[in-house]
Every structure is written in structure tokens, then in C-alpha cells.
Image 1: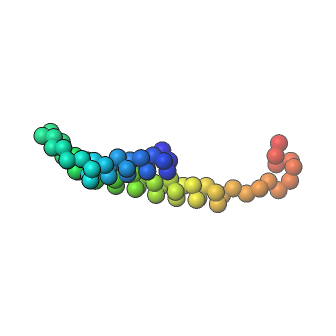
Image 2: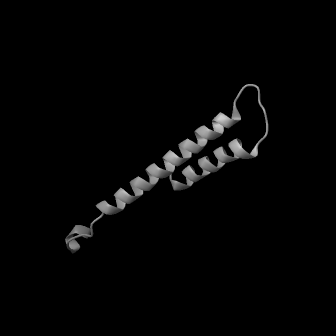
Amino acid sequence: MGIGTGIVLFVIGAILEFALNVQVSWIDLHLVGYILMIAGAVVFLLSLILLITRRGRRTPPANEEDLL
């Protein structure tokens, strides 16, 4: 799950919430849309935080022996 997954979840949730005018008796599509948008935002932010922290930990090798 990465940044792209978060964006896709958010977009699908926005489509369910704002673009569809369909009423289904067994599920509330507006609630599902909000849940997907929140989940997409959380996945996006977590992926971004993990990407930033991973980049900060990498250090170049001190000499050629560390490359082997």
C-alpha cells in the first residue's frame, strides 16, 4: 500500500459520496464514501511519513569494504 493506493481510495470514496445519486436499501453509499476517503487520507499520510523517515536513515558507506 502506497501513496497511489491512498489516492485511489480517496477518489473512489469521493465518487461514491458526491457523484452518485443511487439509493441502495442494504448499504449507505454516502457513509461508505466517507469511510473510503478517510482511509485513503490515512494511507496516504502514513505512506508519506514512512517514505520520509526511510530516506533519512540511509547513510552512504564509509569505505569500499562496506560495499562488499
